[in-house]
Image 1 (cartoon, protein in one colour):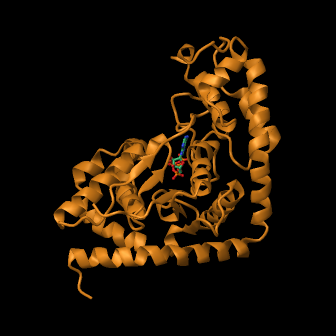
Image 2: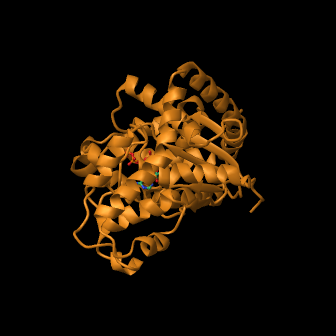
Image 3: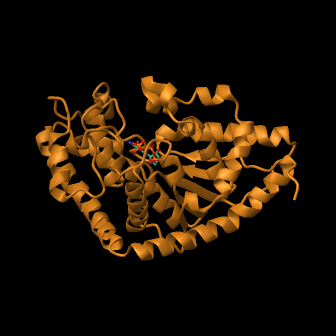
Length: 337
Ligand code: AQP
């Protein structure tokens, strides 16, 4: 394999407001990787993924700008990282078609996210929802990204991305696409719903009480944590004591991730305490971390034209990386001209 430039790529869908799950599982890591300075960092607002389920056009445009504001407010510097929205860089879709012809039906049928999202009504799901992981592979590989930070739920899609890269390289007898590494790290790689410890926290959950939105007020955050489902036992003295207690484990993980600590350390500090003591401490911590971000998001949203300029500039920079990689891919595949 040739040496690839160390490059991070990741994306978030503008399919609603950012949640604490997106922040702890993805965004916070994006900022850390940017600031580590060891990789080029490319971050995307994946609006073409969002429309695999119905999106109101006006809401989609608003969510796209709000997500751009969320990236910047969380610490992404649009000069240091490449920050843009997917629909502005056509190379993603052009490579996705090639990958639709590389990926096998059997691989796609195993994707659990399709099964979860399509549910019992799979016949009525969009073709885009089914093909989504091939577009995701194109998002990553059109930058020859070597590392992809994501939450635990995206692990299977990253394995598919690796399979597509390997099959393309094998079929065309080249060493062209890198076999990308996933970066799934931290105390909260799978933040669970506040109402049901067996379901992940999600933007599209029907219950707003199930999630903390990055734009929630301090009062709303405190209320949601106070009402979060738990059990009647106090916190145990070690992590093993949280086995079989998913809601309690989730709150401990969230605390650890927000405090830049580890779940073991949190348990040590709160061993034997009731949730009536732990929850207010968690609420204070969450408000102190999230309120400055939501205030900065609101400030940035006052100037949508500036957000559009930032995205346009990011798209130009993204295209400068993607266009030669797509051109070479088409040559390898035998496209003339
Ligand atoms: N609950 C979560 N815990 C940890 N990480 C999470 N991520 C999402 N939810 C959690 C990570 O956030 C990144 C962006 O996710 P996405 O917006 O592209 O799509 P998603 O995974 O489908 O997220 P949602 O919030 O559940 O959106 P909807 O409701 O629209 O489907 C990814 O890295 C993801 O792992």
